[in-house]
Length: 192
Image (cartoon, rainbow, N blue to C red; front, side, top):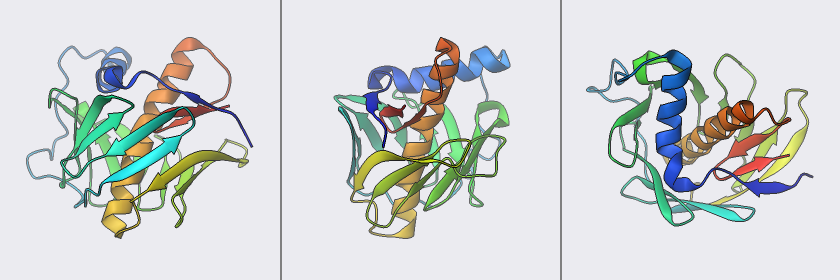
């Protein structure tokens, strides 16, 4: 198995997701996903906790996602994702597609697996016992921590997979910006 090390400080995650998207796509004020007003996938928001090495992620029933001691972002029961100041970041469509601001593709999120933007293969799975299992590009598997409280329903599991996926996207963007080697981030960790 691999080492787990902490990711980006949680207070910066939401701003970092939005900032990374703005830099990559050159937008100064991104527009919410086009179906934002209608909403997307119906999610149940359980009280759940992901223990990931030295960090922990908590999904609360009010949709706040806490990483260590800070609110990183907020999700709602209609699949919308907000930064800590409640500005739109992304929305999970009913078919599992995650759409970012300016309708960017952010991958696919199901109740057990998620795939990164532009790929069909899963980069992690949430197993029935709450274990997060990550996959590298060659298909090798790595431990990714343990969720507790996600398996109360398929829509609650999908909410936990969404949280894991969003943190993984941020970790991967951060890894690419830093020029470091291979790594996945889920929740609050990068697997190396």
